[in-house]
Length: 203
Image (cartoon, rainbow, N blue to C red; front, top):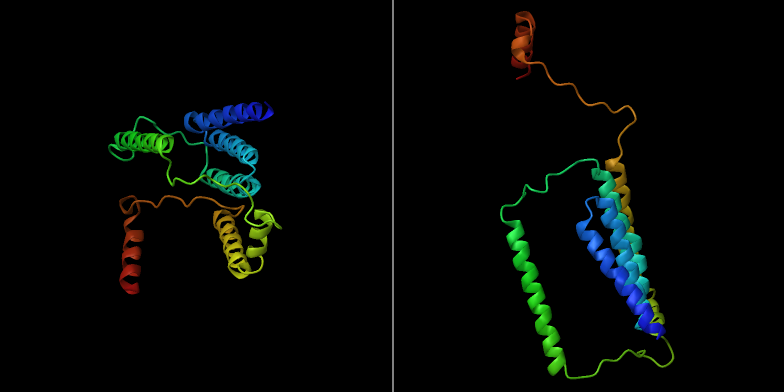
């Protein structure tokens, strides 16, 4: 009974967050709705006794990817209004509708296939691969022994990318936009002649 209650609550959170991601006009609100959705999915993973997937869902997706999305949103600015009636790509809504219809049809076929004879014909297994260690312990041992150097290199590359993005996005305090150049016709004839002479001398 408790499992059903947790499932219903998490399902409501996931669906509500997903709808909020789509219908929110503010990008920040959409990102926060995505956080709620990912947390709900993480709890559902815990209900299925998949602790590793729940931890990855919270640490990687919620803690890293969503934070990166928020960083990009703040970097680009959220104070600009966009005309939703104007399509940047011609026919993109029609293509999006076709893609959604194809995705739903594929999902329906998979559900029908599983209901009749299943995908592989073999029952699923949620038990640990080893009798002495859990799956999480085995994965951690593999990452920090066999794959330690690729893991550390990837972490270093991601750190460098974040630092580079922050440095490139940073503006000096005394930043001022450059003034618009004056048209040549509005300048005195003597100044125009000097500019022409300077260009000829430089070339």
